Image (cartoon, rainbow, N blue to C red; front, top):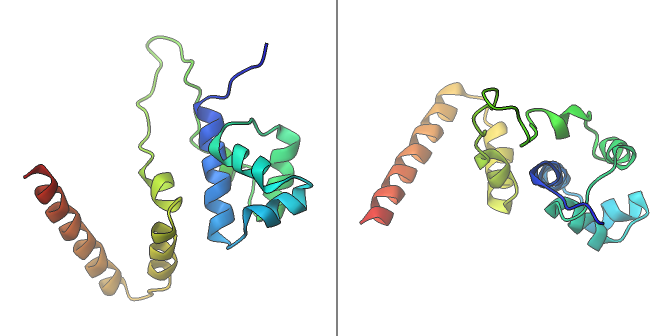
Length: 137
C-alpha cells in the first residue's frame, strides 16, 4: 500500500521551489546535482513525491540554506483536540512561487531608503484595496 503525500510534503516542496527560483537555478540543474531528472524535482516541488531526510539534507547543501528553512513553521495536520493552532496563511509562499513575486522581493530588498520602502508598501496596499473593490463590484 503506497502512502500518499500530504500538506507537509506540499509545503516543503513549495519551499524547495521558492529557494531554487530565488537563486536562479533551473529544475534541470538541481536534478543534475542530485542525480535526478527534472521531472523528479517537479514532483518533489509539487508535493507529489515525498522528500526523504537524506535527500532534503542534499538539497539544503545545494541550495545553500539550513534545513530549518524548509521546516520552520510546518505543522502536522494531525493534532490533538484542543491543541490545534490556527492555519498559517500561505500568501508568502504563493507569492514567492511566482516570477513577479520573486522580482518584487529582489528589487524591494535592494532599496535602502526606509521612506522609499514605506511609500512602496503604501502604494501596493492602495492598489490591492482598489483591486479588491473592482472585483467585488
